[in-house]
Length: 71
Image (cartoon, one colour):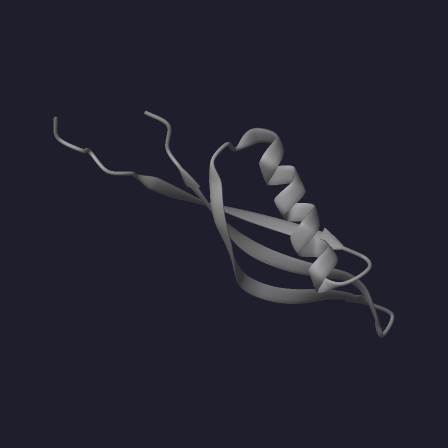
């Protein structure tokens, strides 16, 4: 029998939080787990902030969610 190996997919998610970048990562991860199975990793691709009236009002992250495709 030949082993076909594993195949993964990467999906990009943008998430935000008024608290911190770390919290924004957790928000994105928790949301991704609701619809994606087999998550094996996350890469934080970008950090940004939304600013209003000279103050940071939201921390935003762009995440690459890596998950194994089911056979």
